[in-house]
Length: 404
Image (cartoon, rainbow, N blue to C red; front, top):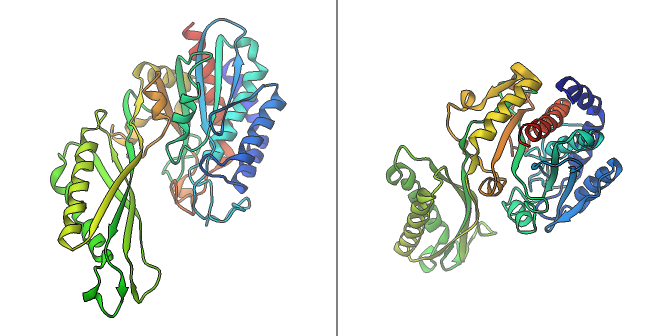
């Protein structure tokens, strides 16, 4: 199957891909609770002639090829949405309050379904096996390890893996592919939860209470010193408090105040992460004690750095250039050679088998796509879904052909 045929046949699928994507967008589901999303994916795959199988709590896998001997390549799309209310004005706006596809996983799912159809229709040409992965719970970094533990990388054994992620709000035309080189491409991420315990009371008598809000505010400010004074300037390490909650009434001092956030580093040995965790715990407990409070710090849901295999990245660049020519850009040119601060739970796969990822631009700032991932107003240009489907197919067919 040559590149002209791949693009032509993928383009013919565009109306259906757009319809599927918008159906998913209207009905977002989060975490592992993907009953309707999973049902749609399995229905689509079955209609193509696949026998989709459950994998883990909510994942789906299907196999294309296998008629000829060869290696196995894994193609992945994540399916979960975010617990964020949508504010974008689109005709297919989320119908579920407090949930939206703000990271573009509806786009990923539709693109991989398009690739699945093309691969099934050209199954006799596949020099090995393509394993299709539809993954839940990426946003909470639990879907990938759950599917790995459930046999994702076995039966048949996966030799290489690839994913695509869409990006919006870029100063670039839609339909560009950003291909990384080898090494770390995305940061690790770990969640944290801080609970500050004081003694509640009436707002008029703070002297007989122990105010946890004041202590938590001091803790939040004190933690900023880790970045400015304790991390080597050559290292990347950042933590962000994204959720701060305390009290229910304006005239009541509560018993507790809580903070939730993330720690991100690009240190494969996680020594920077260890430093941050140690100092966060010491500073939090010390400041709380100084202000007559107690504090607890919990760390959870760790996701490692995304590791890009250099040989696989070189293959990907070559194959994408064959497919889209000048629309393919070296990610290092855009990023300045720096790893991204965002995180991705496909990183768990990247520490098991050679892995590569790339980004598809889906929204030009000059055309009104002003917001990036996770923003309530983010929009994705879904007119380029077929490009993602074609890229999946090109990578699978060419890599299997060259690595028999």
